[in-house]
Image (cartoon, rainbow, N blue to C red; front, top):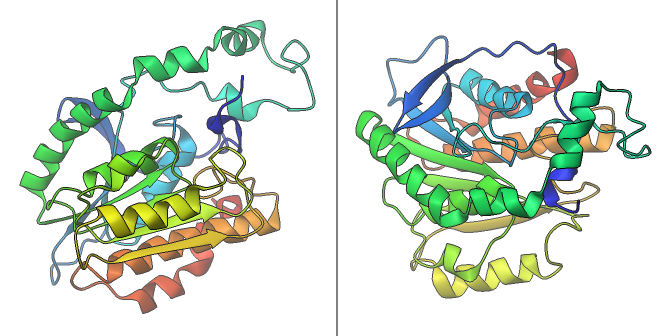
Length: 284
């Protein structure tokens, strides 16, 4: 199996999510709320579009951390209960499937996994249609909506940026991106790429700059940054034993907050800097 989702590490099984599950726009969704919302500024909703692992714990951790910054965070399950199995991330790459120290049923999950068939079940047009229902609901209930996407979700958050309903979008190590995804984007965009990403085309950085220039609506802010020393998936499912990866994970989180702070009234980038030490997953 060769696919972009096999890179990274699963979150600790011991992590206890802070949010709850509910139906939003027809999809089971994880919602994490600020425990002490401000009454002096508009309440912003952050739509988090996950990688191929959907509602896995590493994505719930991100939602909970964004919620601590005052956002109401929603992760929609656009895989409809059929994400990539977390065993993909838990696997010891030095061992064959048969030699993994797992129960036989977990080994069989990997043997049975057909990534191309999984992609066909969750083709991008279908996911876009599902997200339209979510957007209709949350934009009706929230005055300000921003969006962040990772890997698979990085493509779809750019697509959603074509709507006037999003105040800003951020996309990290996006997969499957095409020129059409950038055409007509009107929300301010920030893109974070991995410096050592062999899971996307080598030309992706140049392509994104070209597509933003030729395809986005005029005078819409566009920023892109490459994070050195890390590979695909670092901003969502980092190997926290690696100091470089852990640091870039934190920096990607802060960059997202800084980007949104420019477009969400009442947000302070300075406050974001004071939270720098709060998202080290080893302390959770």
